[in-house]
Length: 239
Image 1 (cartoon, rainbow, N blue to C red):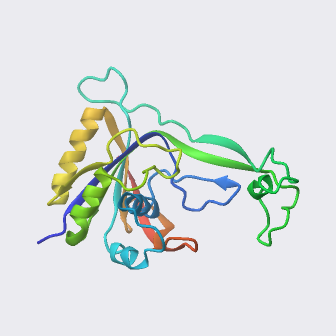
Image 2: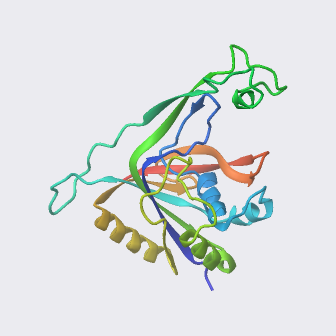
């Protein structure tokens, strides 16, 4: 029997899918990363730690994404695209306002890897970037023996689910069904987008196709404290 296809709908006022971020600057890709989606499934399942064996099994199952923006209000026969919202930049001060003479407060002040005071003091400026008002259909086959378990977990998650960062709370149901074929998934996606008055903006396919090819370091080899990733190629195709 063929492996079933999973459909997830990721929609929220803010999303952030970092693939190459550092402490002071937290960027976001234009679409959900492979590591972000698998991390979301792990949260639903309540699986912590490295998860090396599970991630190795999932590495052979490709992921594709369709990005949706809002249709122009008042569109009748053929919906028209609106302008896509720009990236939102959020400014943070980390470690600011703590008294370094207080043994409890000093634990919240950023330090060097040796535990000493950071250069220039403990307070650090950070910039964090968010996608605004986007929706994504995430389509992927699943191992037949795990599909029902994952589907149940996405509907009744063990831990909180969020779309890239903990302040990116989904505003609609994530799980949208298991399907026998990719064609059935595409039909379901079209129905959701019509209901939500969304228009497809671009599609992301795994591998090299006609379009903009990107190399991402977002296939997780190991989660946990010492995370490890490997590269994959994806292609962005405008719609």
